[in-house]
Image (cartoon, rainbow, N blue to C red; front, side, top):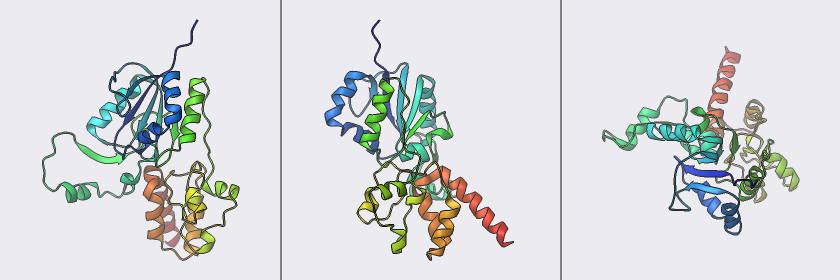
Length: 264
């Protein structure tokens, strides 16, 4: 009996489409990917797209309209496995950095004024798992080519991919980089999931957290460390929420509450 190729679909919502472009940039491997799988839907790569049951759905972008919400639920219903790709899908991305502050209506009006938008009803951008079950996350802004190809290869072989769970600091140590924090620069490396190869710190550029929060997140310790380095609490919170979105918004909210209780 011949083993059937896994049926996959690639979809994009609110974001820059950089993760889909990264997949297309796998030029040497793209033919192999299409040969080892049945790509049923990938608007940026093929014109004969069709719906149907999927083994794996790759979803990029945060969810920010009622139409996107309907669509992602529909994709989830017909997919055995749903994988969030990119920081926007995994954590909400930069568009979710104000999540939880209660200012969405005010910001929306600054952009659109009193214009009547009829295409879809917008709401505050949130990660995919705020609405549907996500089976796996491949973060990145955009995703890393090697991580994606490794994940696809293992999925085709019927195995669950393994991704790093530790912070960027570990990758810095592997590269024997000098710690940027000790040089007086704000670096989000201790809070950020590894996988990028510590690209920015390796060029003496502070990590901005674009891979999203690490699984072993310790905001409290990083917060206190940065305050000791002379950074203001507002600046710290603003920086770590830039890419952390929903997850960091919740943690920061709890952290601020604890700080206020400690002062009382």
